[in-house]
Amino acid sequence: MFNLVVGLYVAVCLICVLVIALIVNMESNDGKQSMLAYMICALVQNVGYLFELMADTPEAAMVAYRMQYLGSTYVIIFLSHYVYYFLRIERPRKFFRVLAAINTVLMFIMWFDDELHLFYRERRWVQGGGHWHFSMSYGPAFYLWMLCCCVGPFILVIVLLFMSSLNTYTFPNCFSICYFRFLQNALNRVSILKP
Image (cartoon, one colour):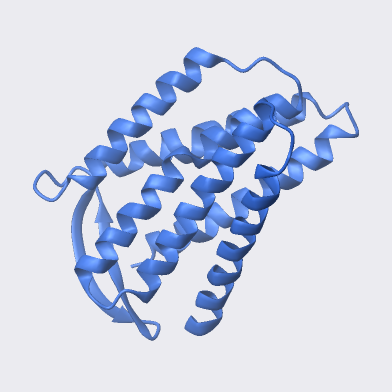
């Protein structure tokens, strides 16, 4: 099972690289920039998770874990930008600027949380499922990060998609992008939250 998960993440990383190469060769516009930033963040997140799976020391796994957060901190923001562009709706710039600032502060808290324990209450390096991984208990900054980076923007995108559902062309395309992104995010969160 472990080898299957590793193989899937290698495939996802290769697909991200292929999509990035395709996007780079497209005409330049705001949608291209948002989608390119989204795909780069998704690649960083998936490579970080792959490195975490392959890590054989707690130090290497923690570097990979932090790398994941570098990508996942901004991935939903750029996805939201793309959906707003695709639906030709003006995005609330101040909201996204404040959200990006909060996400950045939370990311730095996570990176330098070895002493304060605001993000992680406890980290244990354990073996389970055929490989070594972290078993963590989370602090208040983690739950704030989940709200700001995952739940809030995703709900905003879903509401926006349902508001635009009268347009039968754009809705299925945007919804499928968001749906697959949500599935990947949910799988990552389930693997993070396991004991």
